[in-house]
Image (cartoon, rainbow, N blue to C red; front, side):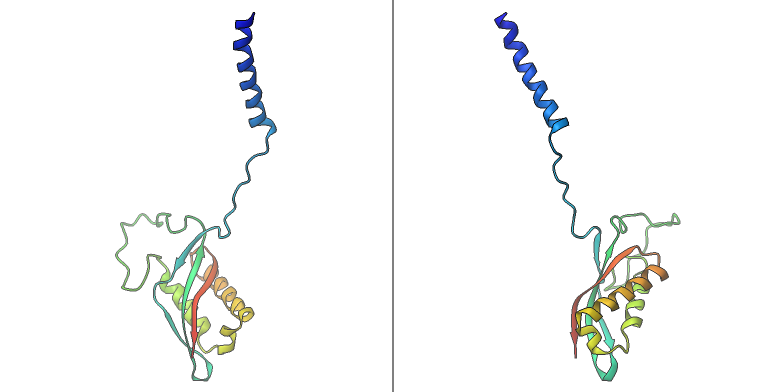
Length: 148
C-alpha cells in the first residue's frame, strides 16, 4: 500500500500542477510594441526653399506596415538594380521624396518650427503618400529639422 502511495501522490501533484498552469492561471501579459511597424529612414537630406528667402534642411523617415519591405515585389521581375547613391531600397522612394518636397516648398518657417503645425504637415504628407503611391505607410517622421 505504501509503495502505491509513493507513485500515486507525485502523479497526482504533477496532474494538479498542470491543471493549474494551463486552466486556472492567468496568461502572461503580451507585450505590445509602441511602434507596430518598420521605420524606414530616407537616406538623403531634404533642402527645402521656404517663404521669405528662408530654407529648411531636414531628414525624414516613414513608419511602414510590418513586413512591407520584406515582401517580394509584384510582377515577377528579376532582382532590381541598385538604387542611385544616397537612395534606399524602397521602390517608390523618388515619389515619396517628391511628395515631401512639393508639400514643404514655399511653406512658412513657423509651420515647421511649431510642433502642432508640423504634425499637421506630417499628416498631410502621409495622406498624399497613401493616396498617390503603393507604399503602406503608417506615419511620417521628421527626424532632424534645421531652419535658416
